[in-house]
Image 1 (cartoon, rainbow, N blue to C red):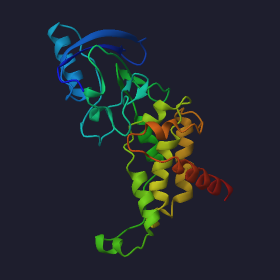
Image 2 (image 1 turned 180 degrees about the horizontal axis):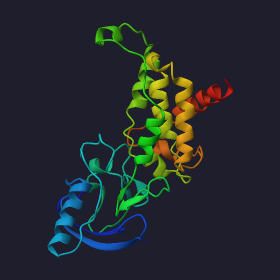
Image 3 (image 1 turned 135 degrees about the vertical axis):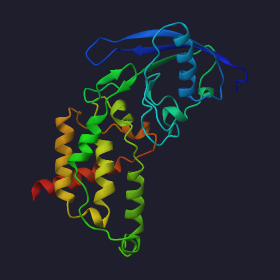
Image 4 (image 1 turned 180 degrees about the vertical axis):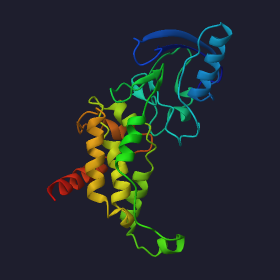
Length: 251
């Protein structure tokens, strides 16, 4: 366990926009506390860069609490870095050692074009969600909704699928840049609940069609997506979606 502050070498992908070629730039991060989060470390580095009159590193962030899914960085070859079950904002610098070199890249996927540096455009995920449409059932008020009985396993599975924050780590981890874990989590979340039954078939067909149109690759079943998902979304969702899709295609 290191107690003192650390000096680290960062190799960070810099790219002005999606049309320009990017390249790695090297920065030295000095005086980094092991208790800082990875994003706080980036804040410190950006302050140094700005003081030198250079352009800071662009990266995405919002909540900094592991909820919003925006802090998508590929760190030393892994989405969200070396720890299991955390987003980049929840990764602490004590996961690294003084003198380490850290390579930071954006998600690499045709469907996630680089906006700038480490920030990518994930609106393809939003378009897949929109293609799924909405739940048209009027669930009434909270009391009425509670009268719809949902068995515990289905409720739990739906709840677990709903934990997906749409960060795209699954796409970044997949050698084919497949969005199957994301899409299947969203399909499962709705398909398992009674309110989601009416549009069930249309929803899965539309979402898969949109996923293909966005240019995501095919599922490889290697399980890299589940392993790198900060919320531990299960591969079972993909099997469920495949069943739903097959059923919908045949009718």
